[in-house]
Image (cartoon, rainbow, N blue to C red; front, side):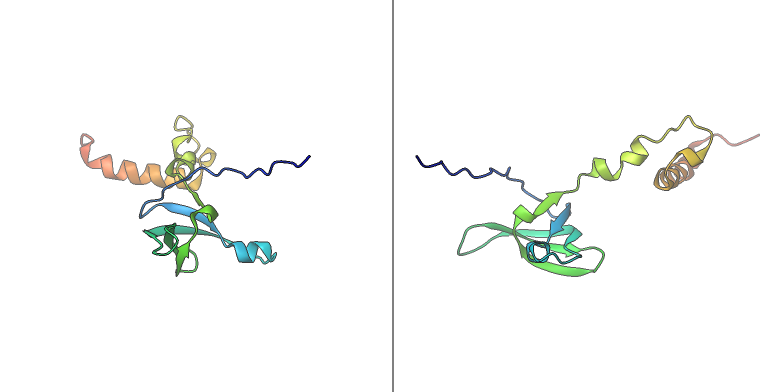
Length: 123
């Protein structure tokens, strides 16, 4: 009796220009080399003329380099909600700003500085 072969089904994600993604370089990863995972911004998506596969061009942020023809199977979307979680959950009722992350404090200060023009003048 032969075992049926199964294949993992990966959900299809469509990325848009400007999306932030995590890209893992499969060659570096499978060779056990360090520096195989990068934060990138999608610069464009396109369909390969011969295979019909959708590929992406990325801009790697820390190294400021262009990566072309990336297979989306090695990319994962970095949602804005994850990047903003510390600000969204900042304990604004706390008098001690040490309880907030530096990003939350910076955002709050910037927001308050922008809204200062709408506050009534002090007497």
